[in-house]
Image (cartoon, rainbow, N blue to C red; front, top):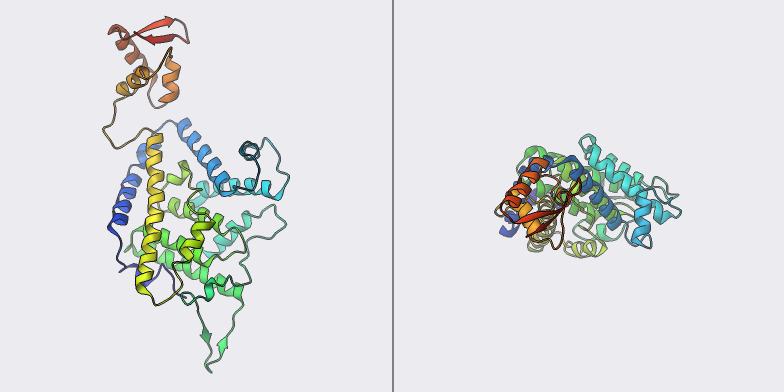
Length: 350
């Protein structure tokens, strides 16, 4: 079987736009230490929100009403249907991937276990590769035929073949990571594309692709998925589109075109997640505003009264003494005045 993540990858021509995005993502990765210096509550809120949004986007159309789905997610409402249970299953496995990724080996066994957890409360058994072909593996690109010494075609159990495909894919991934000749982001993206093309399970292949993306990014130090929602990265339509790009084994030009389209799609999504995280934490790479300027900007854009608590909520990273100092300076300059004194003093612009 020929994998996307194979020998061709090392010498493959890559669009310069993709190279630029990879470089920018790696710059963002290097600045993650800044994110971790944010207030603990801020990061906890981001993690909870990303887990919620990731879960709901991955389980969309399973439950009527977003508020009802949220109640199930937060255990306010007990799930009653199979669709509602899937929210709990996905939420729990998402937390596991974020918290225990360092101990999770990239292997066929791990992938089977993850899929099993997706069906933990289901009557349908998970953690088992499909037993019938989905026709895609019979296209020229993936077809593999094995003959014995007498030239007779050996017919293997299809589930066994899939287990071998995935195990070989995992071994190939681990080998490329160790060799360190290809950027890890390209290896990750190629692994996911191979997984989507193979689609080894009877159901939930897209959910698995999302979870594996989060797992591989985490294991390689790209922690954006811990704080930002990656749930919209793939859907059924993108699966169909990219499968359509890979049907003929010897069409090198089309192969390179397809891989570049995929890499651009994948890198763009990851980069946008990093940009969104920077904006969420007010860490834009434009001219960085001082804490004083940020407070003044909020005050100048506020109509009516405002309080120090308003500033604390909008800028949780700014310490109390700094807020007090800015307020005192603005009051001395005659730019703001206190309207109601006390613990929750109200202020207004002059």
